[in-house]
Image 1 (cartoon, rainbow over the protein chains, first blue to last red):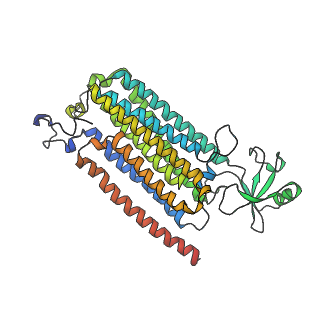
Image 2: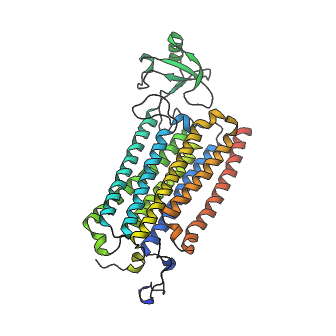
Image 3: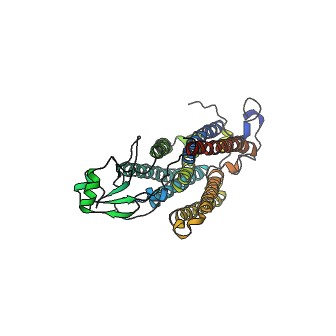
Length: 285
Length: 122
């Protein structure tokens, strides 16, 4: 920002020690310190994810195979939904920084307009995450294992049943090691029914103990990392909404500056920043 | 309500129409860049493996680099850290970067060992 780092201030307005540390207001500096500690928490989670993934001897799920559904559509769209979520969050980060810029010009109308768009973007992201959780928990049909240790994907026409053997289009697919819902040998009709009757385990969808995608830790980290981030987005939306109401009421205009928008903005950009890393290290790698 | 912060520091962030126009142009340029990088990442993640499965390792490192590029632009432009004084920039970024590099190194090193134990000794 032009000014704040360069302008010299007279001694009688400086902090008790003679000057403000770093030529920055108290509120902004504390927000930065909070963000650093919060960033360490997220790093801890992602590094723990890396540790588990790196040390496990089981095959780890592949992001573009697990996340390839779009709401209301059939077919395979690898990572498109997650990319859409990323785009929504980046867009709402842009409207936030535009609100901050408008605040620096004391443009109350501009601040209100961009803050409304930021809140809407945040709500869209939280909603998308809710859909993704629902889809992840529900799963794509699940798998069964046999006494011989063979693994079969359970396929039906619409994947939407917990009684697949009586559903339309029921068949089994002998699983290819290390891939999700992919297999070479298709088993149909009575042969498939026989394998189904003799199944040892049936894993359908995901919970904290087991999931159809891979090792239990995979779903645990999915829930914990995206859940922790989603909670940050949710609280960010709440903060942005409160700040928006204050801007509408003219609190900041009377105060003479819109720094509160900037502080809320720092938090909001941080949420976006964390998602950039989650996107890479959880979904892409 | 009586407030005890030094308002001068908060007022310092004010700028004129002309400066605002320049800043908005910069914001939209960074937006375009972030969108393009994300699109490239998704395209690589979704389709590269089918074209050239052997070079997947290279793609992974590309992801890491592109992520750091995105993070730099978000922190420096959107969060305005690039416009703050150098000492606040260093005090935020340096200790953090050092600690995370150490944490990454120790976690990867130890996870290799744990993997080796589970593969060979159990």
